[in-house]
Length: 148
Image 1 (cartoon, rainbow, N blue to C red):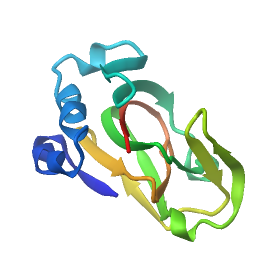
Image 2 (image 1 turned 135 degrees about the vertical axis):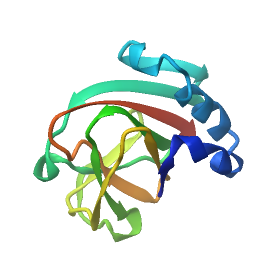
Image 3 (image 1 turned 30 degrees about the horizontal axis):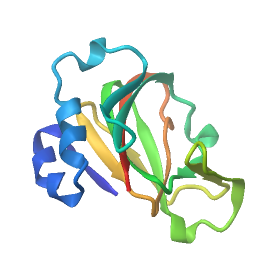
């Protein structure tokens, strides 16, 4: 898991071939004006999901993990708090992995809660279970999906 400000994203571009294109998308000046939904970057290898969602609170936010995609979650506006726990510590499956949706859910609670500041991003690899939308209030977030 990585947490940093978008202005320093260039230092992470070398970690994966798709990161550079994903961070370039996040640096667009009109990001807040884009429509909710999927935005193509590089076909199925890299794409963005723009979400406008209310927070669910810590109690309703579930740990999830992906196998085919790395998440780069970027807060455009609002408030966001995300729980984290390594998938190696997740033993109780609450919803089995769904290959079509690339997501599985766990019953454990996160080990830590992290505030995602506006203008910052978090990178979640397949070994990072994460519980998004744990804050209260609305947020606008871009999630860059980068194929493993």
